[in-house]
Image (tube, rainbow, N blue to C red; front, side, top):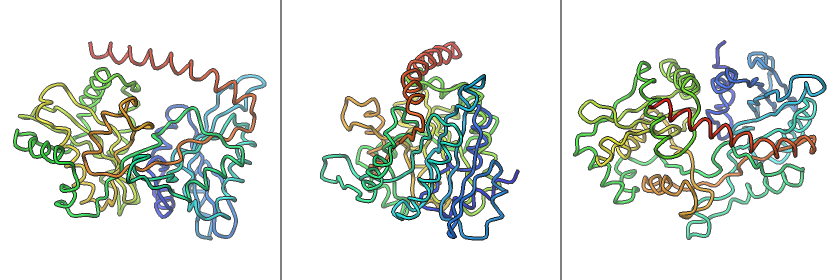
Length: 388
């Protein structure tokens, strides 16, 4: 179906995110999730539909919306209705609007109960603070702190399963290219110029290169020790969002561009740049050991910043920063790279769970970490075997 309707709705709300788009729901639908679309209108109504086009009967302005993903956990016998619900980067609304926030949270909690959900997980981009904690630039956001307190009062709990990064680094793209370069740390700026001098070039990737890009991503995961999914999953995501590029209009449709760094015509590094509603995202990055001394990843990020700015984006989300800002955090090395690009650390609420049934939630929370550990171990081995 045409995805424009839902994406146009959410693109007008505060902090629209590509993980709330129709396309993301369709990706997850291929992997066991059912996308559900909810809207709240100015006249006090709300509606939930599996087909977003059915929401067009509303005539009052939409003031909040949420893509909710539903997955059935047990589908036999007495447990047939048990499910989990997840609203990635949602719900979307003005979280400082207390009456609206109350409405939305009340309705979501009632919905979770009616769905027989073990829990409903939300992780909206509600800002708790900016800057590295306990540094000179550390600034708390009072609105975010209030939301956190209200969720706790309502019985929501900080999730032990954080799906998205709680913290990130944002780069302001409203400045000129010269100003963006000057905001970079001197070493980063030097490495960008070094890559250019050493003959690194960057171009847009093509659909028929996705297999090559996955192999590079798999090589990166084995080298750096992180777990990735199977090839079909990434090809589904990348192809769907890349095919949207030609039809993306005025920022209301999400799309992705792979940027490929080459040396003498040989691909050595790449990133996937996602864009939606005025914000760009660095979601997937990959590189080979070949020509790493020529700093291709630095030039890739600079090219991404320029392309995102040219496409009308005002912000570039570097997708992730440490939970603990020191060498003990596994993301510290990646963060130092991102920090050099001249962005600002933004700390958000993270994932909170509402559990209608505390017993089922406790059982799930006890069992799932062990299941995930086994799956990750198998996934690492499978990826490694695929490269041999």
